[in-house]
Image 1 (tube, helix red, strand yellow):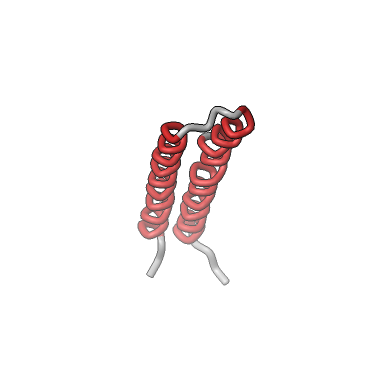
Image 2 (cartoon, helix red, strand yellow):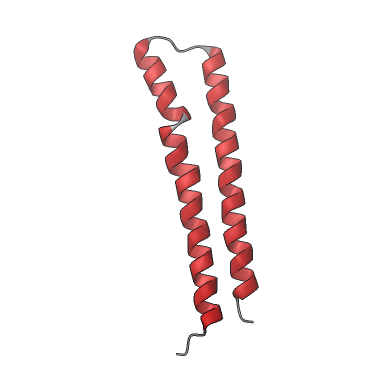
Length: 82
C-alpha cells in the first residue's frame, strides 16, 4: 500500500484535532471549573454563583474544544485524496 504525503498530512492533522479536543475539552475542564467546584464544596464555600460561573466556563471550554477539532477536521479534508 502506497502512502502519499497528502494522506500522511491528512491523518496527522486529524489526529492533532482530536488530541487538541481531548486537551481543551477534557483536561482543561477537569483542572479548571470542575476542580474549583470540588475544592469549594470541600471548603464549604459552594454557592449558586460559583456553580453558574463554572457551568459557563465549562461551556466555553467545550465550545473551544469543538472549534479545535473542527480545524483539525477541515485541514484533514483539505489534504485528503479522493
